[in-house]
Image (cartoon, rainbow, N blue to C red; front, side, top):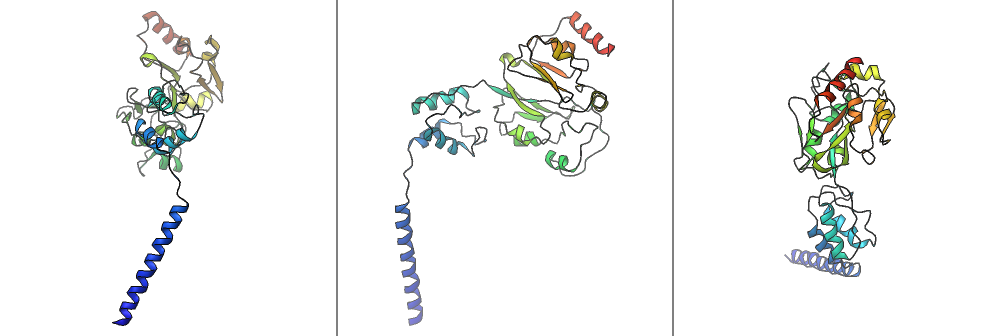
Amino acid sequence: MESLVTTVLIVGGLGALLALLLFLVAKKFYVEEDPRIDEVEKMLPGANCGGCGFAGCRAMSEALVSKDDISALFCPVGGDECMKKVAGYLGKAAPEKEPMVAVVRCAGSCDNRPRNNRFDGAKSCLVASSLYAGETGCPFGCIGLGDCAVKCEFGALSINPVTGLPEVDDEKCTACGACVKACPKGIIELRKKAKRGLKIYVSCVNKDKGAVARKACKVACIGCGKCAKVCPHDAIVVENNLAYIDYSKCKMCRKCVVECPTGAIVECGFPPRKVAENDANSSNKVAE
C-alpha cells in the first residue's frame, strides 16, 4: 500500500513539475498575435480554396497584416470589393485585378474526337494520364473523368454527359484556380472575364503537326497561322504547331474565328453572325 502511495506521489509530482515547465516555456516564447488578423479573416470569404497562393484564409490574413505592400496579394473569390475593404481597414493600397474566369481549351467531344479504347481503371484524370495517353488519338486533350469538377468548391464545373467535356458556369466561377491545378493535361486556364461573357480563344492544346492533330480531332488547331496573319492587333502567336490568343491584346474583332479552317477558335457570348459571314466561313473550311 505504501509503495502505491509513493508511486502516486512521485507521478503527481512529476506531472506538476512538467506542467510548471510547460507554463514557463509558453510564457517565455509567447508571441502576441496582432488582433487585426482576426478582423481581416472575417472580411475574407472563408473559402480556404488556396486561390490566393496561401494554405487558407487565415494564412492570407496574416500576410495582409504583416506586409506593408499588399499589391501582390489578391483574393480571387472576394475580388476587388473584398480587397478594397481589407485595404481600407489596414490603411494600405488595395491591389486591383481584372476579373478572371476558367476556360476549357479542348473541344474534343465524342463526335469530334472518337474513342479508340476504354479506360477501366480508377475514375481519375490524374491516374489515367499517368498510365497512358488517353482513350483517343489525341494525347493532349481532355480525359473527361472530372477531376476538375471534383476540385471545384463552388459548383462552377460539370461534365457534359453528351460531349464528355467539362463546362464552366461563368457566374459561379471565382477563378480560384483549383481546376487549373487539378487538370493533368493543362487544358484549363484562367482568362480575362469580359463583359457579357465575351470570349475568344483557341480551344485546343494539341502540339502535333497539322495532319496528325486533325486526324485525332476534327476541330484541332493545325498551326496553319492564318489566324495570326489576319489579326490586326498582333494578339495571336503560333508556336509548336499551335495558335494562342493573348487576351490582353485581343480586341474581339473575331476575324480569326472566320479565318480558322478547322473551327478551333471559339467565340462565346456574341450575337449570331450574319448569314453572309457564316457562308464565307463555311466556304473557307470546305476549300481546306
